[in-house]
Picture (cartoon, rainbow, N blue to C red):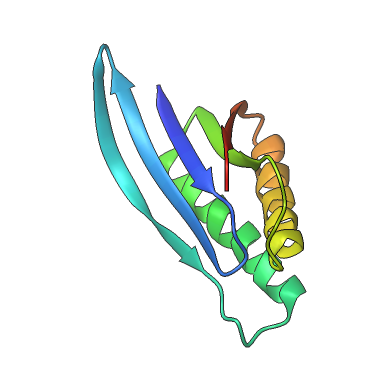
Length: 105
């Protein structure tokens, strides 16, 4: 099984891709999708859409885990939630088995 884990954000989307073979977990790739803060928000969201699609098409994961927020205290919360929406849309379009990760911020 190949899994992509995603930490949403507008400026930076963190990701990691692992493969599980029997009991072994192998890190295949990890990194950050960075968007230009000088661009309009809608262009940054589209960049996340494009880059995530390329990443998924390259690695062909079969499952995904995306961080989900419990509470919202930051001035950037709306942008992060919008980025998460784009990420969820990409994953839904690829028919992923999705596992949500709940982390406190």
